[in-house]
Length: 281
Image (tube, rainbow, N blue to C red; front, side, top):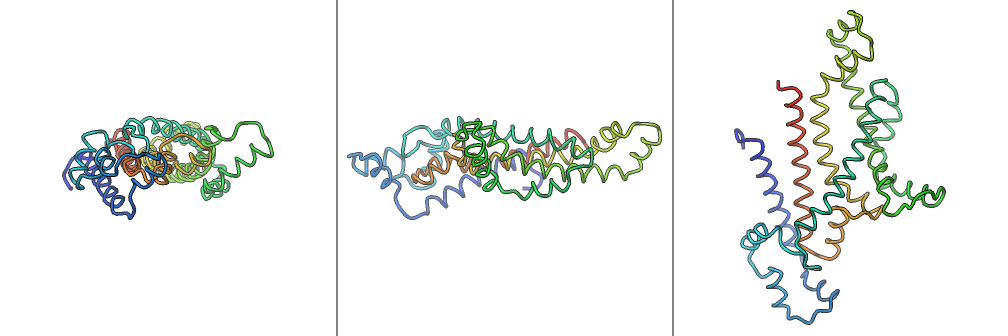
């Protein structure tokens, strides 16, 4: 795909992810109608249900049909997949963006001051599967100050802790590299204060690479919040995906996988665009 525009490469990758995930899911053993009949107790014949849900179509016609009709309809609820997932995606975007902003708000001053590197190394390796339950126990049992289930604040904190550690290390490393350059020492020699020199002659030149990482990390964060959403019982894209997997709701699983992968790829594209916008070179 060399020579093609970046947006076209991203679009082709998104379509490839959708087709591949659909192939894998449709090749799994079992019949989703079994779950639907067991849960709803419907008396409609299987052939009628299969036709109404579009499960009787061959692979490629069903793919074209679902793409044309908003990724199809949920097997268990009958709701259109795309509007349902987009409404859940908004909650996931708010959670991920809040966690990223909180992490950057702490990491920037800490990294510029050259402090907290040891704590940052510890924070990076803390998994959300451990941090989330720990916060649940801390604020739900030991210090019951807030309603832990459905708490977007604790979910944001769970995501922000390892992010903060990673950004402290990354920003600190990039800033230290710039402070060794002649332009930084020249700025100090001309009488510029160290804080201003750090901002103008260390952080600013390093910002291009940092913005590229920001886009990539934000996209990956959007696609990976399902663990935290499940821990804190938040209605987002992740919990919708897990519920659909348990219910064998193929259209909803395919749609959630498609949107999650798309956000990761769009995050990478956004990071590249931000880097080129900041530094056209």
